[in-house]
Amino acid sequence: MAKENVLVKISGNLIENNYVISWLQQLAEKFGGTQINEAFEKHGFEIKFGPYGRETASFEERQIARDVLEINQLQIQDLLQEKNINAEVVIPVRNIGSVLCHINGDLFVLEGLLGFDRVCVLTELGNVDNKKIFYQQYPKIEVIGF
Image (cartoon, rainbow, N blue to C red):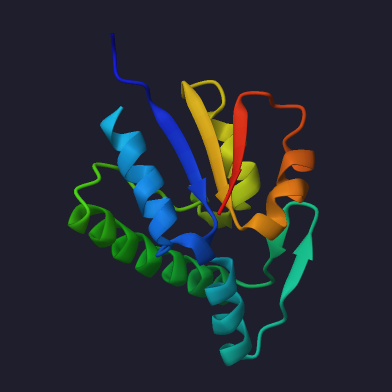
């Protein structure tokens, strides 16, 4: 039987949670929004969200957000390697034509529905109900709170 392919979306605040790491280790045997807000505040940029997630007004804002995500990507990849978890870390940023486009992580998950055997969204316990409501029309998506 082929190994199950699983898309896992992890809320940035859970990256170093030992229960999450343990969950990922178990999964492998059979991961930034707060940091972007901090970077925007540091640079004096407005923090604004619309129906599709964070709204940016300039290339500089999009680049700062991407930089934060890329640093997280490298740190998470290192953390997973230290724990012997074989996984690829992908950030929700696309280049469409010549435009740098950030995709809300919750919407990014939807891109994987047709290709992955299983889709899991890991979030903080206080966000579980909202995530379940958001994904209610997608029975393939499991929302798991930590």
